[in-house]
Structure formats: structure tokens, C-alpha cells
Length: 202
Image (cartoon, rainbow, N blue to C red):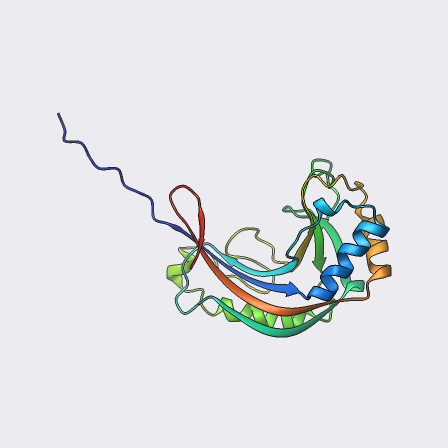
């Protein structure tokens, strides 16, 4: 008989996130508009509203956990509601907003896109061949990890909110009531998942 071979634990999974966090004043304003003007229940709102700028699933040499005070103003006129799923920017029968996470995307014409890209570029500089593992590097419009197409987005509603399928109705109210969204904190967060999938900050 062959001797028993010890089980091999898989290498821990790493996640690198770069995010812009909405300021407290505007977070409260968004919550108020969505609940009072749009009829969304508070339990369906996302608590830590932020724009995801970058995500990788590999350790990145030179990238550390850090938080920086910033001032990024996003005009809402150049934002659109979407289902938070690949292809969710366009209405699709299989993507029911009522059952899925819903948010807004920052369009290319948005005045804040240049600043967002500058912050994103800080992470792109660390995409070495060891990090990419054969993947194509991220660009202004593509991601090496996750969804292929890059577009800055911010989740607003949790899955199961019951929101109307026609998200344009929600968007009209949102943009009418809120002119700009101010983000005051840029954070790079690094997490490791153990063999059981538990998430631990590094």
C-alpha cells in the first residue's frame, strides 16, 4: 500500500481593492432620496457606498493597505443606473433589477473620469507578469481580473430590493434631486481568504 499522503492546502487567495468612498453628507442625502422619493426600504440600501476603481486577485508587490483624503466630485448628469452584473448597463430579460444588486455607472463623458483614471493608474503600474499570470494587462477600458470591461460603478441597492424593472425611472429622480456626488476618501484594501473562504484584512 502507498503511504498516506498529507493533504495539500491550497494557497490563500488574495484580493486587492481600490475604492473611492462617498462622503458622509452625500451618503445621507442618497439614502434620503432613495427612501423618501423612490420608495426604497432602508434595509435594501448599501451601507458603505463607494466607486470601485480597481480589483485584483493576486498579491501585488509594492501595493500596501492605505487610506488617503481626496476630493473627487462626480456630476450625476453623466451617471446611469445599471444592474450590477456583466452587461447590466443594458436591459436584459434575465437580469431582474428587483432581484439583483443595483447601482450607477460613471459614464466616459463624466468630468470625474480623468481623476478616477489617475487613481486607477497607481495600481496598473504594479501589474507585473507575475501578477497577471498570462492575462492581458488592464487598460483604461479593460480589467485583467473580473469583468473584462472597466467602468467605474457604485452599488446603491442590495439584491432583492424589489425596484422597478425600468431603471430609467429611478435615474430621472436621482439625477433631478442630486447634482453631484462628492468622494472624500481613497482606500486600497488587501484581503486574504483562507482555505475555508474566510476573509481577513492584511
